[in-house]
Image 1 (cartoon, rainbow, N blue to C red):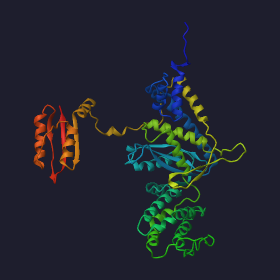
Image 2 (image 1 turned 90 degrees about the horizontal axis):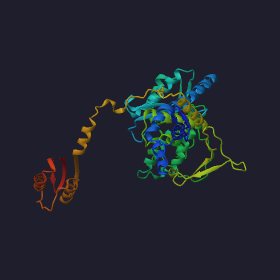
Image 3 (image 1 turned 90 degrees about the vertical axis):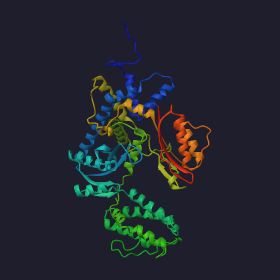
Image 4 (image 1 turned 120 degrees about the horizontal axis):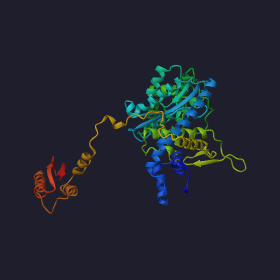
Length: 498
């Protein structure tokens, strides 16, 4: 007997169904939106439930397998080189705000521009969301302890918990701050100062001050913290048109004679004194001394932009779902981090000009890179099909999914919760006149009629008595707190519908 099928069958499963699920996940698309496209075209396709089944049984193990392979190759090559790596790290929350469910930590080899590992931390495993970044770094160092890879330099943002951890546990590591994060803090302080009375002149120095901060670090490739700090503190004299300094590490400015007209600050004036407080602030100066002269975490931030494609912050994912998408983003970034600049037909380099909002009319010249490649996707397809051929449906990720955030709380009975939700309504309002008070109560209860009440709280009490007496088939009980002061009322009405 002949059976016709429109696609190959592998272990009693249509192969094209698995390929559709693979294409959705490996491209970083959201399954609900991707499947909705087929629905609008009136094309029969797999359901959302089938996609998640494929993802759990075949696709997530495929991503985990390929990521482990790539990671092992990197470790083996780094161990063979025997050189301590320069690592840049940064954390990322899975949602906006300060109530993230998961936080990922991304360590990157800044010399080779490769993501070394992906550490995903659930917030209930630490004492709070702000501590997930530190926990991610701790797990990263535990991962390196099982290998011969050694970290020589670490560059991060100004995270006080991480700074203390490195100082106490790994004092042999050269720890530096990323310049952009320090400059961002400086810019905010100066912008706040500019808004003060008689301090507007400082705004004309804002760009130069931030550039001087970068120059203080970049012009000191040896990383000597005393020299970096001396160069930074020389700014206090420079803005007052004084270019010789008392520091033995930096005795005078290195620029040529300034011929153009500048609005120099005068000593002992309000703008000068307030700006000096910012420049010589002890905590900020300690951060300046730790500025990285060569390496920055801008590439890690670029990777976070790639993560937004695979795992948008406005969408919630399960722990393994988020881990899989983070690994996909890392595979994509590692394959395309060394792309060359695109060229025209005549062989000239291609550039583009953009006008971002924060530049306030300024522009940025960007290189146009070659199109990205997706060779890793071809390997993932093969691994997914191999999992299907082996009937490897029981395969799971090596990472054990932590307990949900709500596991420590008491869960109500679903039917009781629905019944309570349908029966109880709580209305709160704050009104400034009787008319608004009555209209709000009518909108909330629907039980007012054409009735006139006397002024004061007595009239409101009459209103509640009328509501209870004339609408007893709607209302079982009514509790109210009334305060009356010049006809301004605040009431809290609990209405329980029968």
